[in-house]
Image (cartoon, rainbow over all chains, first blue to last red; front, top):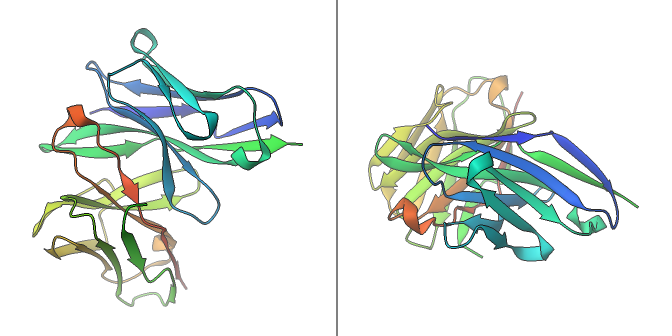
Length: 115
Length: 116
């Protein structure tokens, strides 16, 4: 079964600094990967998704992620952090379970942005 | 935004009582999921459904049951609530006709449940 690992439960950056949130997946086949963002007391919102069309994926709010098969990684980046980016971020992958494709999520990374 | 409504949004209940959470969608998506979110654990799958009356267990299904009698409704029942089931519950939907389409998973706004 596929799974995802998010390195770092908390990441702290200064406003204007580079944001890097790490996600590694375990799989021997090309996966279908997602990044979601969750603002306080809200549901999860799609940031971007990789579906093999291009290895560099651009999402909303200036975020992008690069699929690197050799490193089994799908790290999320943003060149310049804004205060409004403070939120919880989740990496996810579809996992085959009993003939069904089930979304499996990482444990999440809380992004803290300092003024 | 995808049409997903969860009810109730907030509930406080006593240990040992049954509780039912409802998820209603207007997107006609085949797959529906119930997750619970707890600090340090991310989102964990409780049960999912791949069609009317077709359901299966997820990784944390003990103490929970589900039903799906209509495409648009997916009910989660805590048969006898315990304090360990205090959590935020999220309903999600998707239409992964096949994995190659990489179809997006859409989430409801969540149901906050406190068991005292």
